[in-house]
Image (cartoon, rainbow, N blue to C red; front, side):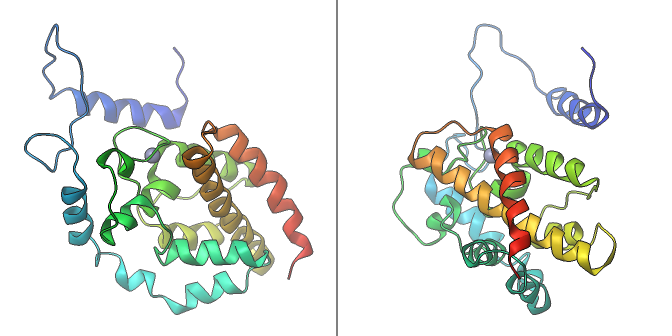
Length: 217
Ligand SMILES: [Zn+2]
C-alpha cells in the first residue's frame, strides 16, 4: 500500500508504539485507560487528570491581545462567541463537565469522533484524528501549513500568521474561527442527533460557510 508522506510518520510512530506490546493469542484486544490500575475509565480519574493539568496553559489562555483578535474577526457574532469560549476553554465539553462535577456516565466522557480519548477542547478541536484531517484539508485548501502544537491558542496564533499581510491575517482568522464553530456543530450533531461524524462533510461546510464571511466586518 502506498502511503503519503504525512502518513509515514504516523505509521512509524504506531510501529514504535506497538513494538513494546506482547500480543496474547486467543484474547480479545481491549482499550485500557492508563490512569487507573484496573484499566477502566472512571469520571473520578478523569477529573483528577484534568485538574492536574488545568494550569499548564493558563498564561497563554489569558493573552488579551489574542482574545481581542477574536472579537475583531469578520464573522457573525455566534461564531466569535464559540471561538472565544473555545479558546477560554469554556465550552461544555465532557471534560469540562467532569471538572464541574456534573454527574455523567463513565462512557460519556470519551470523544465520539475517535476511540480512547477524553473529550477536552484541545482534543476535540485539535488533537483528535478527525480534527487533524479537517485541518489538513483546510490548510492545503489555503496553501498553508502549520506545525501542530498541542494547544489551541498556539494553533490559532500560528494559523493566522501563516499567510502574508494584514488582509491574510483577517481572512485566516475568520477561517480558523469558522472551522472551530463547525467542528463544534458537527460534534453536537453526532452527539445529540446521531449523525455520523464525517470529515468530508465538515470540510465542505467550512469551505462553503467561511466564503460568506467576506460580507461581515
Ligand atoms: Zn477524538
